Length: 54
Image (cartoon, rainbow, N blue to C red):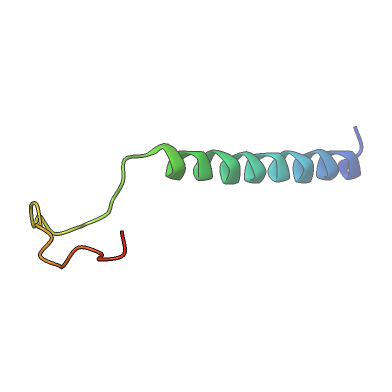
């Protein structure tokens, strides 16, 4: 097989790997547990006035 064909297949394989890494990396970020760091404040009661127009 000529070296030019090997280069084409090599570049095609690299592009396929990069594309699959990109897609599977995005899926891993979507379906992984959240990393949000919210404070643990507990329940906060509402102390406002009710809407008089209701």
